[in-house]
Image (cartoon, rainbow, N blue to C red; front, side, top):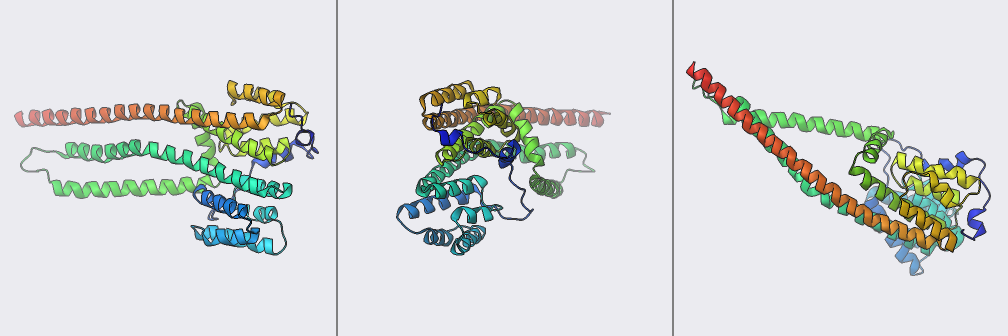
Length: 369
């Protein structure tokens, strides 16, 4: 058990839906800029460092605004500073910029300000976003080689296959390499335009959340991507959970907000199944007993944390464990993808060779006849 009554026995919300609603953030207008992870990392670190040095909040926001990388970030920080100067709290000012700031960031700012430990919350936020950036860079770096292989296979394979299809041994209609290159460039231009249009359509649809559910279904059901998705989601969930819990927020609020950071609607919905049990006063072990997403290790660590009264320590360990498991899952997934890619390239080369000899022998038959 937690033993700390204020965390578990805070005033209950008007309804369970009010707590569940915390997981869903309003959709932004199509062209509203939102601060991304790349901007959040230096922003949180600058704010944490400046605040630790004893610099007032308004001066901290001014310094962060001056050092911001993008115009959209500077605009958000300018609005934050103007709102605080007008007499609002930092948490209320951050909520007013909810269309541009992550809800997780605004909640921790507000709770840190209310609890008088804004310096701790800023440091935790800086560490949190730096960890996420490190994981993201590791994934992107691991995808460079497969991306190069796929791109090279497409351009070289389509070029060679096109030559074979147009190859002719007829002296009356000889093969012209220059004409073929012009046709090939035109073909690839149309392909790239089609890819660009598809990317724009997907981006526009992403503002409605539809691709998120489609990709979520794929990434949570298909191996080995399901393991990567699950481990990363659990790592973010427990990392966020412990930060929110240490900020003094109610347990229902912590679960709802932490579930939103998983970035997967199906995993989020599964974790939200714990809310009714928590609403009835059950323990975390009971609440997450029906959640299929949690691993056995996570359940055991939750039980140990509740019984020992050191839930925050156990949650940190669970988050770290799943982060390491996620890295291992990425390695396995990349090896699988590389193997599948080699099979695909080998199949393409075999198809090109077979096509060449089929064309060659058919031309020989026509010449002999």
